[in-house]
Image 1 (cartoon, rainbow, N blue to C red):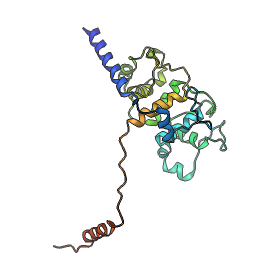
Image 2: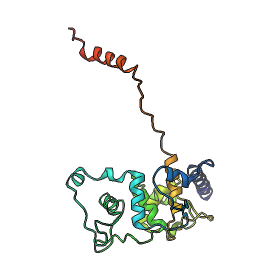
Image 3: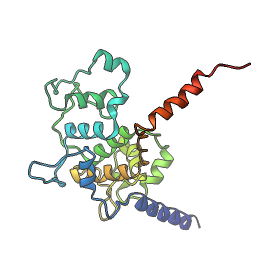
Length: 235
């Protein structure tokens, strides 16, 4: 009975993840992230979806997608304090973005205060960084194991990345392989991250358009405000 119950739970979990992570058939994930300004095409118009991502490129994309710079403390922004990075000079094209992800804990440095900006990112590293940039509550070990148990290569996911990957997997942001593998040690591609960000964007509530007052309405509005705030107090 216990095994049957586990099988049912696992089936329901797989189904829910599949539904949550579906990309709308009328939405092109690549075009969506390009239009949102999160990623860009080459000069020839190609997106290079199968191309791998470097750590500097990932840092830049995450800052754009999740407003990471807003999390930097006021004292950091006002005093222009920076973290010493031995292999990223202030002249590096992604210097400020790298500073943002390091100071907010979205990404970390290696031994010797090195960031290794040109190093290729694995899927484990990339999805874990996406989870950190997104924020939210870290799942318990029990919840983490329950989520990752659904994937055929769950045991190959590094221990340090398991909670973070559980977060993005539960939201449907991971494009799993055909045999339902997360493939944590394979390189993260531009297509992988475009698809993850597309699903993320589709899950956001619609923004409310700004209130647009015509010039004819403004005198009426000013008159109402004046009567409310300038009326003498009685009693």
